[in-house]
Each structure stands twice: as C-alpha cells, then as structure tokens.
Length: 190
Image 1 (cartoon, rainbow, N blue to C red):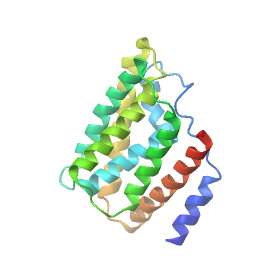
Image 2: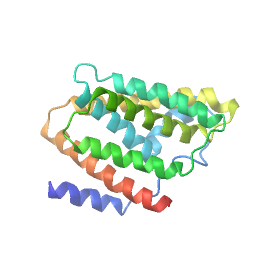
Image 3: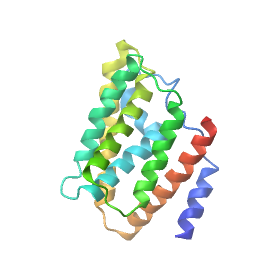
Image 4: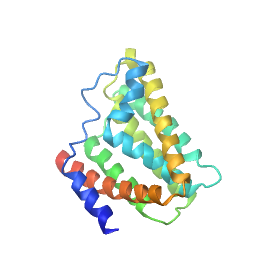
C-alpha cells in the first residue's frame, strides 16, 4: 500500500493544472468526442464513475453512468445558456478528490447518496464544458462529448468488474492519484 501512495505522490509532480475547460475549441462531434480523453480531470472522473458504479450497483452498473451522462448534458445546456458558478475550476478539482475518496472507500453508500453525488458531479462537469460552447457548436460538441464520456464510463465499469490482482492495484492507485492531483489542482486554482 505504501508503494501506491509513493507512486501517486510522484505523479503529482509531473501533472499540470486542470485546464480542461476554458480555451478549447469544440467545433465538431469529433472534437467533443476526444475532449474527455484529453482533459485529465474529465478522464479521471469518468473512469472513476464507472468503477464506483460497479461497487454500488453490482447487478446494474450502467445506472450511475447513464444518470451522469443525462445530467452532464443538462449541465452543458446550463453552461451554454450563461449560468455560471464562481470557482468552478476549484469545484471540478473537488469532484476529482471526492471520486478518489469514494474509490478508496470500501463502504457502499445508500442509493440516494450515490444518485445525488452522481447528479451533482455531472451537472458541474457539464456546466464547465457548456460555458465554452456557442449555440452553433452546442449539439455537435455535446453529442461527441457524451459519446466519449460513455466510452470512458464503459472502461470504468469493465475495470470495476475485473477481479485480477493487477487491476485491483490499479484501482487503488487511481484513487490515491485522484486524491493527490485533485488537491494539487484545488490549490493551484485558488
């Protein structure tokens, strides 16, 4: 377990601030699709949602990712229509920390808590992306981002369902890395 913490802290020094939001061009379905893979905060949270869903709903791990995608789309619309939250980058970093803590925990949360947290994180991530979209780009970028997000959720569900020791180590390392990198991003965005 100590090696996992050392690796996570070591990777922290090679990371950069979560700049996945302002300044990126979303002008097509393809650009929207690849954005979740290029924005580290989005990549980490989407994988974590898939993994976490397998721990919360063993018989239906698709529920939380589906809820996430629906509410992320709503958040993108809110952001595109001009709704803003002060300190959104810091809040996004906090979602990375929270998902890392949830992955590190072995406790199952009540269904109402898991759904609420999924909805909240989804709306926040969607708003962050929606704020940079114009109405002309909105539908194409949203479709691409939802497809990319769905792929990452599926990868997370697959990782969560695997019982191999190496993948268990990966999931624990991912949780530690998310906590560390989220804390770093939070400090850098203040």
